[in-house]
Length: 298
Length: 298
Image (cartoon, rainbow over all chains, first blue to last red):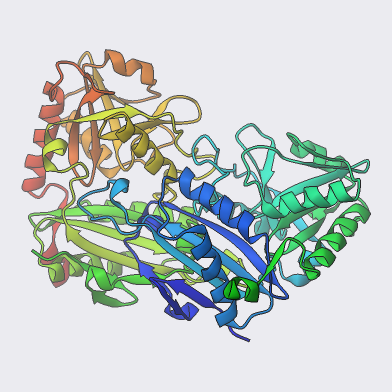
C-alpha cells in the first residue's frame, strides 16, 4: 500500500520528500489553517463543504489562497489518484509563507498551499474508533475563541497535546476539554456528544463546527432522534446514558469509559450504534460523496 | 553580510536550505518550544539563562532534548561563528518530530533540535525600536496560561498575528494584548512596562517572563528606579507618563503613542531613555555576555 502523495510547491511528491522552510510563518507564528476530509471507496466525503469551511478558515486568518476552490478540488482528487488509495485521509493546509526576518509584517506573506492523501487514519486505531474508548476530562483549558477563533481550523494545538498527556497519565485513551466558562468544548480533533433519555446533546460554542458533526445532526434528523446544540457541563456526563465523538478520521466513535469508569453499561450504546451504523452504511453508498474519477474527468 | 547559518539534522546549512518535514508535530500540533538570544559585538547575551529557560519550556511541554545544555551552547556559538556575524539573532527550537500518521501518541515523537544565527533583528526596524512606536491595545485576547502556559515560549501565536492585523487596521505599528481577566499581558514577542510618577510597573501573569524584562528589572535596581510586577489594567495606560517594551530583538523600546494618541509628551520618556541607554551601553561592554570564541575554545 502506498503511504501517500503530497502536493507541495506545485509538485506531487512522496511524504518523506515533503518539506517546508523552517522560517514559514505557518510554523513560527502558528499562522496556518487546514481542513481534513476522507475518501471511502474512492468517494470523497463532502468535499465542497470541507473546502468551503477551509475557505472560511483562510478568510478568518486573513490568509489568501493562491488556488481556487475548483483547483483545490482537483488537487485533492489527484493526490488520492496518484497515491492509489481507495480509502484516504485527505488534508489541505495554508500557511502564510516565509516573511523576511527583518520584518514581521504578516501582510507581506506569500501564502503556501499544501494538500495530501495518505491511507485513511483511525485516530484511536480502528478497533477503538468502532467499539469504544476511555476518555478523560482534562484540567487543561481549551484555547478560548476570544484568543483564537476555533471555528477556524488551525494548528495552534499545544493545549490539546498537553491534555492528551494528562489523559495518558490517568490511563485513559484521550481527552475532552472545557472552555474558559467551564463547559465542554471538544477533544483533540473531534466533537463530542452526550445521550440522555434518548436525546443527543452537543456543545455549541468554542468548538470547531465539525463536518462529521453536521452529518451526525443529519442522521439524527433522518432517524427522528432528538438532537440539540447547547452548553454541556462536564458534571452532566456522569448521568449520561451514552457518549460518542465524531471526526473525519474515525467517523462516529463510541466513548465507553470516562476516567476508567463505565458510561452506561460500559459498552457501545444503542443510539450510538444506530448513528454509527447509519453513518458508515451511507458512506459506503457514496453519501455526500464525489467520485475521484468524476473530479479528474470533470 | 551573511544571511545566517542554521543547525538542523546535525548539519550547518544556509537558511534557504533549512527545511523540515511538513508532518513534524511541532508544526501540525503547535508542539514546539523555542528561545531567542542575541550576540552583540560577539558577546552572546545571557546564554545560560536563555538555555535554562529553553529547558524549562522543553520540560513544560514534556519534550526531550537530544542535546545537553553544553552541546546547545556550543552549537549556538558555532552558528554565529560560521555565519560570520558580530551582531546576531540566535534562536533555538525543539519540535516533537514526525509521529506515524496512524498514531497520534505524542510519547512516540523523536524530538528535533534546530538552532540558527541570522543578522540581528529589530522587530520594528532600528529607528522605531530606538525612538518609539505607536501601539494598539487589541480586542484579541492573549491565549490563557490555563490553556497553554505562556511561561513556556511556544509557536502557538495565531492570537498575536491577528492582534497585529487589528493594529495595522488602526494605523498602529503593533499591539498589546489583555488576558482573560482583562488585564494587560504582553505584545507579539515583547513584554510591556508602564511608568507613572517615576515608578515602573509591568504585568505579572499570563506572560513570558522575558530575559530582557529581567535585565530591565536589574537596571532599575542598579539605578534605584522603583519597579514592580503586578496586574496592570489597560485603563491605567491613559495616565501613563511613559510606556516601553522589551525583547531580545530590539532591547528596550519606547512606546510614544497608543492608538495614535501621544503618551506623555509624545516622544521617548526620560526614564525609558535612561533604562535604554544603560541597557545598550552595558551590552556593548559585554554585560552578562559570553564571547563566541570563549565558547568555541572552551
